[in-house]
Image (cartoon, rainbow, N blue to C red; front, side):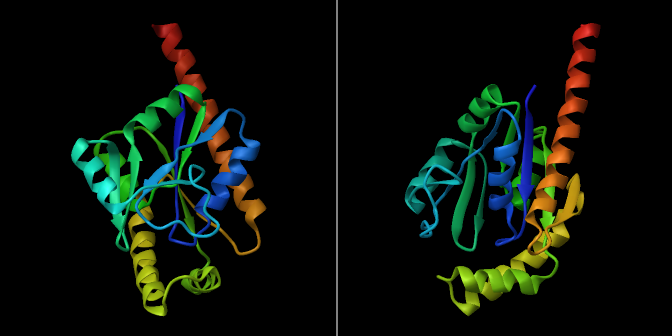
Length: 199
């Protein structure tokens, strides 16, 4: 069986960067690409972290039952296509996804097995600075996102792991998370072997 790993953080918390680094060092791992209705940023490469579609297309796909889970964050939709998850779990030993807190809780309700890791910022001021450097949004929008970030941190208590992603120490975070995933894969392999022997 493959391991489905959900990595969450507040906006600007480093989840996409972490996943990119993990893909470089985790054998036979893949990224589950999220579909979103938000406008691509200059640094976004379609099909890498996100597939971009229009607001109208997203709502049509909701009606079609296309998504395993979806959420609306700051006026934009984000969702996980059912077929993409199934295909990735067939192909890879480890599938990484950057779901938010609501998406993770949707998986809980549907009893979708997964390992969950939440990246905590040192403080919210760091998230504010990252948002300001990234640009493209107003101060009011940044304030709104920080308010949501505080709520997400509170709601992340039921994650399997919470890891502080210290500023300027990404390699430490990558090492910690990679170790967690490797241990989970070993445990899962042991369980699979046991089931095979007993079966």
